[in-house]
Length: 152
Image 1 (cartoon, rainbow, N blue to C red):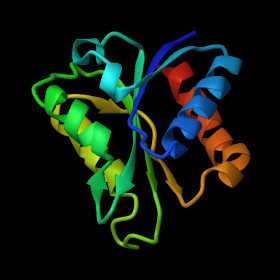
Image 2 (image 1 turned 135 degrees about the vertical axis):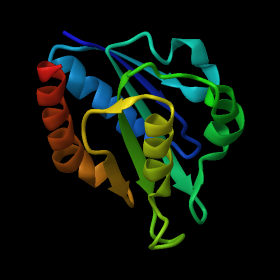
Image 3 (image 1 turned 120 degrees about the horizontal axis):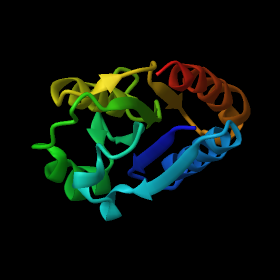
């Protein structure tokens, strides 16, 4: 059983919905999952779990969600992830820009890589409304992630 920490930003609720689904799936698979909004999460705890999941939607033309960007992002810039196992979840909507509509995943991946974290699984990228994608896309991603966690 791994201890997993999810930290997410969500203004409209879609990222929260996806993170709650991920937490439920990983709990069913035998893991202990904590799920916290970024505004309330102390940055010093980024490296206290077996796996850190960072999740954020993309806003407008390739920006992080406002709460994540203003309330969390500045606080974690000096954090050394100390080889923390990490995965990233990014959401987006093509109504903004087809080229940058899931840019949050790329931004978070770069953050992990440049702050000494270890990406252990491909990012989950959800395009459009997540509800119809939960039982197939998100569940399949959780199953593949579980296999990677078991191999740690």
